[in-house]
Length: 361
Image (cartoon, rainbow, N blue to C red; front, side, top):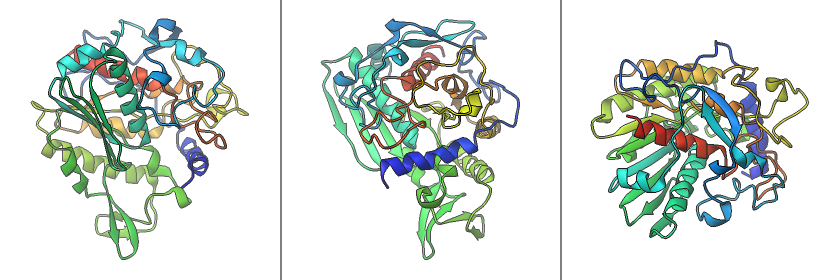
């Protein structure tokens, strides 16, 4: 499937991203477990401020960036989007220290599990660490389902396992079946010291960009169903897998949160606009359209879990960054990508938040 077609298909995501619930930002701990934030501070409520020192690496010096995220290489003329830093309202976000990260996780295995937004965050983390230790020996292996960056001097392995739904797609006689109660792929996630999960965008793809032919919902095989209901059931299967298969004394588990799109300017009161040509974030700390329904579903599922899962609640702070998408500045200039994010760029902040969560617990 061509890149431009995928971008057009991603436009459909924004149709489902209208909020139907209150703006809430509860990411402090789930079911009384240890919180992501420390001392009552919520890292995820704040504003974007100009801070050129927050620029952590150059795309030309990082060997891990995919062409679809490399906006500077493919002609983006402005650089202002690189000069913003996320400033929480009630505390300071610690500056990312890649060498400290490696020392803390020496000899450990880290895995991102999810779709191309996981790819975005995985490449960002690899670039941020590489910039801190540019002379460290590394190995880099890219495969369709499992990719790995290893910082060999520290024995730190950072992997990406591509599975956009988290639950399984099983080949049956009728074709590809999205099986809402099956998660056999989870066998590949065992034995990790840290897991960072993500899933949402592919659940609402339709037509040729849809990754399945049928859905198996328990005993029922259906051609289609309400996508939010399917997402809830699939996410509940994932939550059950984590509760049954992860030992929280050995493995830290994060959920990346719902990454927004910016195809429909009416969401931020510019009805004729998209991310194309946007040069600055939205001011303030509210997004006119509110949170997407998927964020509410995710919060609900996480709160019912027994194991602690730390939610990196990136949704609101990412909604404010209508300026941070590749748009036409990827290898394929024919599309308008308002779904993924430039690197360097916004995913670097997601990883700063991950680092803050790890260093404040």
